[in-house]
Image (tube, rainbow, N blue to C red; front, side, top):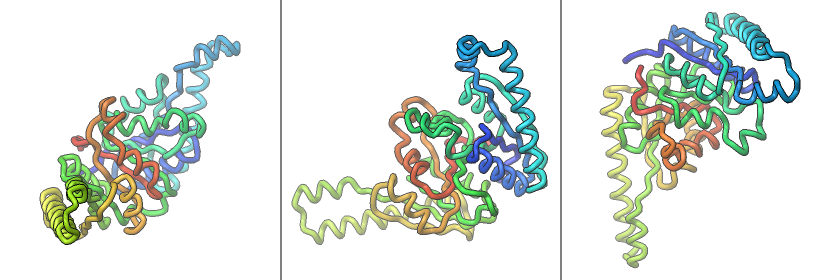
Length: 296
């Protein structure tokens, strides 16, 4: 199984981004991977602000130099904490676009759960939230302080090829961790039986058969994605994935959730990623979102 060789940690110098950088360093140390630290000087409105406020013409250069110094300070801390030498990269432009461009040369992008502007993200969504849908590489959204390697991983599945990619990446991300595979089972035909006034015994029998079929599907999926892996367990529960996944993560004591996504188009961003979005928002732990082809 291919290992993670290059990790990119994007930072805006916030507390959350610092937490993400430390997780990235911990992962880099465990995988023997190359670590790159990236900061993007946002130039979208810089020229307008420079004109309006009378800022110096070289303001972008000075911001880039300051960012370089701050990245170097972070790299020094990470080297002392994890014995990992990080490469510092400063880019200028539109933050999301520059991060995604750099991420195309990495096996994993690591970002903080929040940024420096909590008000803006409440109205428009975070840069991280946008990148979850548009990125072509696995993205790890870090929520908690990285005190140890990942030990328990929850992998929600829906029996698609995206689930296979998530399972295989979960094992790459945490080679020594216990994986728990979880399926939130929802049978729409059960509602039809209620409307048809079917006997309660018939509904219960149908529910049991449908749940058993789902459990068999999970068993088959695990056998296909991770054959012979003894550190994998699985379960099925009835209900809406948007609510059940984060609750199951708590119940399992998971320190990261790894889940697949169905695309990186605007359509998927608007309509397809409801359970992914809900999980990132609700989860008490870190969340990794994996495209169908992680390319590692």
